[in-house]
Length: 199
Length: 199
Image (tube, rainbow over all chains, first blue to last red; front, side, top):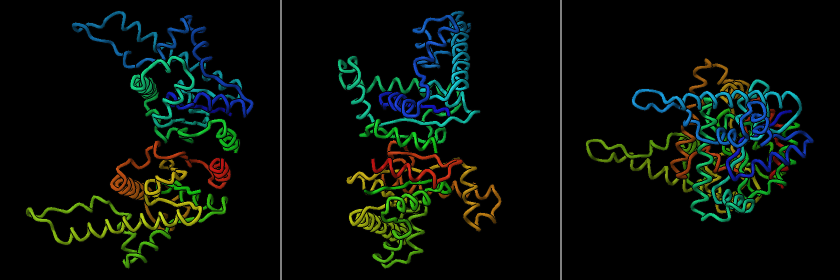
């Protein structure tokens, strides 16, 4: 049993994933993926996180006076290497034990073993509320800036996903179920989703 | 408790709605809405069905040599009347008893009372299979024609919904949950969804 979770920033997708893993008594992978990639590639966790959370279009070489900048070519290779490593790490995790994997294109990477694919989303007000309730950083931001930040993070997630998978992030057809967490207590929802997955 | 179901043609949304109503022991409205509109407007059921299932852009008057055709203006008024009546019928149904309402922009019409909104969808192969298994008409069609028919029905549903609601049919944010019925036994799914709604 492998469950993948795609989620909008602030939708509580990570919480849903964690509680689902707890409920089903299976492993939960989220930040551990970054740690593992960093270990295997000997890059810093910080750098790996930056690469996988940034706009993948930064990958494209910028032509300066009709020549490729050397540094950009190197960056592209390194980013591709990180994605390759991410693929290996995720396949290994899914092959080792039942688990919930949050983000990281896992639904696509694991498509051959047909994981149960969940997408978690919510309306903007609800995402702002969730950010404010869980992060002191968010509390310091004016609402307008927080909305901008949420949109920008999701834009990067979408670009990263679309770039590596050739699919569209958040497109219903790529998920078995899409859950709107607006005005929803995630803990109440989880046992039902768990039962649905167990069938 | 009012549940609305939007659904792609061939996704089994109607079956899901019927079984959900049975499971919850509440009323189920689908074709009854058309019957009721016909009764109240003194139009034939057939005509009402045609109007609500056809491309609403047929509504727009066609300008012929810079004048409106008289017959088109009349048609527009009749179609608007049917939508107004549909709104009344659906509000009355939802106000009378707990129920499941399939299609007919009910999620939008009932937005003030916050129904539980489900959208049911599936991949094309699965929709073709469902059509073949439940309809003798479908069996007589070559696959290509059946696919074309499914797409055309959904295109009309989308246009009708978007025209009357100003929203986008099938947009996740307008539903509490979106369920992919590809390779899924709907009867197995229903009890879990029922429990999720009961909370």
